[in-house]
Figure 1 (cartoon, rainbow, N blue to C red):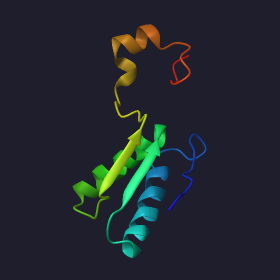
Figure 2: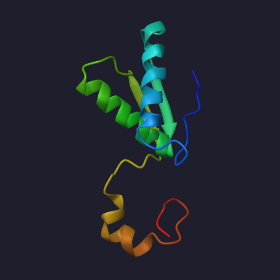
Figure 3: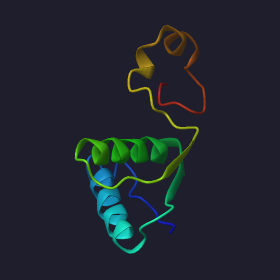
Figure 4: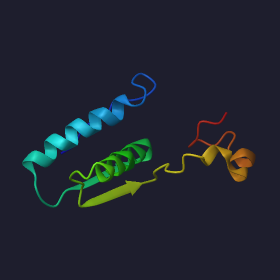
Amino acid sequence: MCGALPATPEHPYPAPLQDCLEVLRNFYKTHQNNQAIARDSADANLVTAFDQRQHQQQERRSDELVLVCGVLDLELESNQSMIEFATGHPYNGIE
């Protein structure tokens, strides 16, 4: 399965997570075994949130997650190295 997730800021949180939940729950109904989710960047963060929610609600989870270059530290911008060196870096929102 391959899908496009709605981009922010046009679709602010939690809309992308809700869309992800709906798509993956429907996918689990038809595919019972050996699911892997692979996403990168902000989508990796979204998939992590989905997996945590599924765990908390004791619902079906993917067998594997492949998270490439995920931004998973929600306090990243408060780290001293980020404050000192992030300005102008192409992979962040600090400008």
